[in-house]
Length: 343
Figure: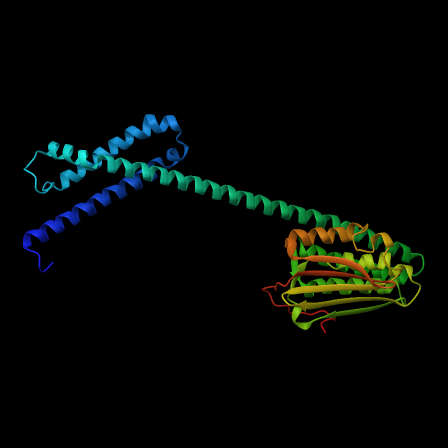
């Protein structure tokens, strides 16, 4: 610019100012178009575009050129002095097509943005509906599981009443505590492992009272897993199934082992029980199962999708193992009180 003469510098500044004003006018048109006509842009059909938007684009282009010409009476450069309307016609002849192309480009850009927003809203609504449906399914499964657990336990207490009233009374007291824990949890689906083990500790104590001297219970939980999150009442149906279909058929020397440990980035829970083994028709672990195990499978699928695994197999003569593998997640609230099995 130092090498240019004064006339060139003035001309350059004038052109830069003219471009800035023109872009400002175009930007203002875009903003007004979106602010006042955003919904109509999205819903306009072919007839509306031809009958309304096309005349509007012509009007907007003419008005924009009229304002621009009024701001810069010095333009066009290198031409004999013209009246205002002559300059408007001159600029329209040179710029009208460009202005129309700009207007319609903005129109279809806003239309595309509107379609994209509508798509995202529908996608978000679908995700919300899917989440609500999954939560409703989980609540339904919890409602199915709680009465199932209650009725089976009440049947156990009823059977014990005929042989040991004191033990039946103690079991009824323990059942009351379990129900209190269940009610306090409400509809919470994922709970710390320590809370689940507290529930299982009381449930195993009830079963130990019922099968006095017949079953040896062993529970092992790695000490750094007490804050791991698991579905509520995950283990109770599995342990109940072990007692109902395996341990209850033994007169003595029954064993049940609950083992919880970390497996890389997953949580592995296994329950091994002695008994009569699996029926040959279901030795692959996919045979007929009761409400409890089916409930566990469904809840694991809803919580974790394909990132979980549930297997049931006969690992030795008369020994059945149920293994649950799920993603290892930790609660943000640290556990203050641990169960007696935190070894």
